[in-house]
Length: 409
Image (cartoon, rainbow, N blue to C red):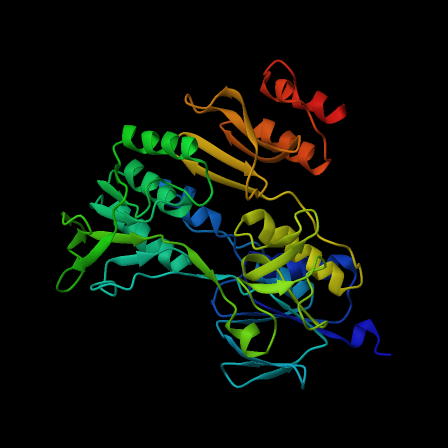
């Protein structure tokens, strides 16, 4: 039997998930070879600041999660700026774009997701941006620094964070959302309305039920023509219409793929030697009775750590309450849970005043919670949900009853 010190673990994807995974492998005591492969030339970094503080203010450069010396000290091989192009499962090796063939004993896919692009006339013009990488952030930040008028296509979390940042930087901003409300995939209608009012009050021109017909310009984007027939003069267009999991490698290798790389509760794919975590992974959630793919900072970090530990022999199921946050103007939005439906809602505080929590209940249990400017409370709500506590609706609604007490009950 091969000793652990003679084994090679390869991680494909050098973002947040990949960085946390290799860290966890060494922390767990894995003594073999670790290789981290990334198509981007950068050391691992976290993406949330790209659409938040690094756009809302001229906050300087994004810091890497670890310095290069950190990897050297832990004897982790870096192959950055070169993409993995094939997983050859029969030979148990990964082939890179530079022709390198790298054998593995176990493989972790943290390939993340790619931004969706517009398929319309003018979408490829200079001045049309998406936001996923450091380079994307720098290009958009330069646009905001010049205080030029912009159109944001998409009223989801990223689009609205970008819109808020642009408005705070002095840009005239128009948001185009094809659906009839903002953040409609993730939030109930009453919360969508609160954020539409928030952006409107801060000077953002929000247009619902409106898409992009085409983008006009000669050398660069100069105007956006909407599906309603309006023409909006711009200096830049930011497209935020969602992301798609990067599953090409997995699919070509014959792994099970369905809205992400299908993995079990231990983060194992349909090949017992290949694991997946982060935005690209669709994991079986026993407590939900379904697979779930999450696009969140918490999941990218913690699921990758769990996958890495399981590769090292932990054999521990990963099951956490989903958590997500967004900062827009002076409102911190936090969400716990991933409910498909619920039977009743209970409100604590004043949601219209952007200071409260909306609980979504089913069968007496909290299946989801949405907090506005209640970050401390939401930490306890997440713990209450994880513990399976069932406070009554009256207790949840009463601001005089502390969540710490409900957790202890």
